[in-house]
Length: 265
Image (cartoon, rainbow, N blue to C red; front, side, top):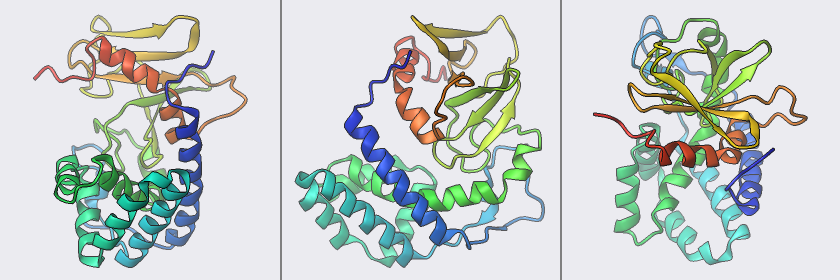
């Protein structure tokens, strides 16, 4: 049984954005992410993105934002004035700032930017983040063999640092975590919290949705963290991590309604 609170319109838009990003990935596939330190580690609190030299061409990045803005205008003409305002503000200097702030997931910066220039709050971060993703995806591809074959002791995506929230059950029941942001994937013990490392079976449990045997929400009573774990081994269509995350957003709501996803600190 498939349940989703994401509208069909939004899912269709995301598919079109995915197609755009696929074309951008081809344009950025030659970018080499050189290590910024002597030996990259996947057993600390620093994601791969912070251990490499990420060189992004600001003009290329701006061209991606322009294409995305045009797509949004096509889908929602009422956004025309807002998109034009953003494009008129952007230049290579501001692009550098946006890249750095998007890399660090600094929502506060983008919220203030929207307020300062009378934009809808979601627009600046959405444009900055979506235009960044082809670089992040290429980074995860370039280093995939490294983090996929090593023991990852990082409580977030080892490639881009995105908080963990999505996983799949594969083959004989292995737990594979997925990043909806950069599409990295890595193995983790089935009985383990992806947020704090807790392995105590008495404080780890799962939530289920009635009449839905393929989706679970693994929760940790130690840190209040949760991960959506999807068993799509028998599914005819295997969704990419971005679409899988969107089509299971109802599981996020259920977990949050139960009090998970909120730090105990």
